[in-house]
Length: 319
Length: 227
Image (tube, rainbow over all chains, first blue to last red; front, side, top):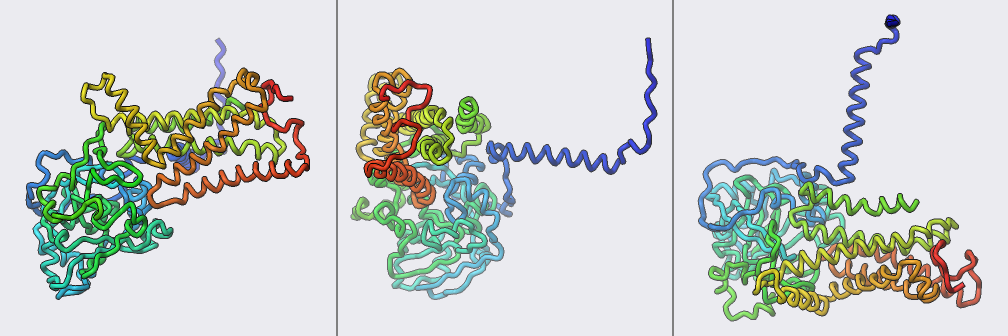
């Protein structure tokens, strides 16, 4: 058998260790980039990328008793399937884009027909309140629904603190408008800033809350951090996000969606299976995670609590 | 080239499947599948409509060979779109008084589709767009070109203009507030149809348009009965 001896390797031929490592690093980076680009094209990994901080709300939460027997939707679904047009009109846009929203410091201007108008620091609004968990159904006007374990407090508490004047009849809410932080507002998809409104008795109703968290944690930006409205018997768009102004007034406020399409979206926007959206039926809804659509309930199933607010009103006319 | 185009045209479908296996179709997968198949239908209609202008502008005739396949892919995605609507929207919102496997299920399903098509304009135009593709898909074979004659076949296949207009209208009427994307598609379709209109006006005026001999374009390789 012929055995060849290995030729001597000249030291000049040996790759310098640093260079060798650099090459390895380069190859690894190139591979990662290629895989990453391919994954990006294929949309892989979009679901697991969770870039927002998750912070537990300290202290015990008061149990409100609301939502017994309802199974909340997954955190993932609640936080990645959002309508928040300030960050884009696709459902996954807010989760991807809302990291630019700066929520500290945050002030809410409370003005109009109140005895104590001021710019309130968020801490001063929230601190006096005993936060509680409220598991509410949320029915979107687009025919889907979720169950969400909100953390918040009754809006009535705050309103009482600022003392509405006797001639105050309505409450108008405004979302932050900031083009740097909110890329979706650079185009006039809606008239910015986003505005919503409630009748004062709706706002004072014990079901109406200001939420600061969900699943025991502070709200992710895409869900309307740091403070948002939740009105569970109305279509989701009434529950305005990232509130910077609360104004009490004697005139019915014009809300953004009504401004955009008045024949489709009204001021009240109570969940109502009898009154179809002009373009689709509202008789049923798909609970996220389910296949078969459930029948939609009048006032989203909260009729026992709120129907009296609308006694004698034609709900098809005042949609 | 045909094989390459075929593979490329299947990518959106494969992507959907892949996302499905990875549970990456958003929290409302049926709506996501509906949206994706819908937009790909429209894209393939647009691409199909673009073939003739591309061919004339570039003089690159072989491109005509993939036109039929592209049109069939528009129908393929349109079919997926319609089936998703049928199952995920109509079937899923039925009552089942006699259980799933019952005569009443079929009757209720058909009634529910009919009611939706009759009552909701954006569904009406979407349905028109879909139905208008059916005869085109059915007569896409060489045998049918022969049977109909190239001229008639050509006339029939102008139905795709209707598909395009109805399809983009469907898209426009469906969005809630952001009409940017439907507007872009409407613009492209207007250009593609406007091009044909301009061409036909020019012809009517008698000036002959230089072409490869036939006034109508039947894919080469398929026998043309008109000439």
